[in-house]
Picture 1 (tube, rainbow, N blue to C red):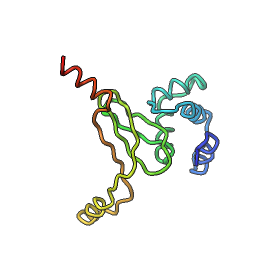
Picture 2 (spheres, helix red, strand yellow):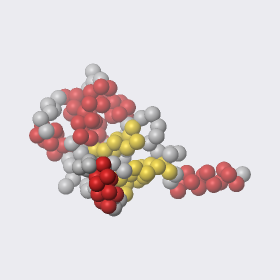
Picture 3 (tube, rainbow, N blue to C red):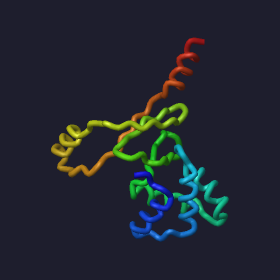
Picture 4 (cartoon, one colour):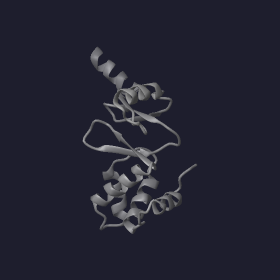
Length: 149
């Protein structure tokens, strides 16, 4: 299912949240974004539409969208967390430590590990977040070129 701005707005209301003009401005900003973005990016775009919007509102709205599974947060190892649209289905991220590129991947096959950990700890595991960090092809290639000089 493709989530349109209208569908996301309906899901927010169904989740018991008010759809304030400020939240609409955040949704508009997210809707215009096709890749990863920072809360500051959303603030800049939403501020143009709604000049009195605060950064706290941006973070709260993004947190609601994350909690509802409509977007996901990606940790790049830098000060800011990047948020991106969630592709359909279960997925995880590869994050480049150099340029911050984020690549989605699926098929993490963690079921056996979850079963073992659950058995050892008594936890009933309900889900997981999985990110791998390293260097993308471009950054790895640049690093190799720099080492050869």
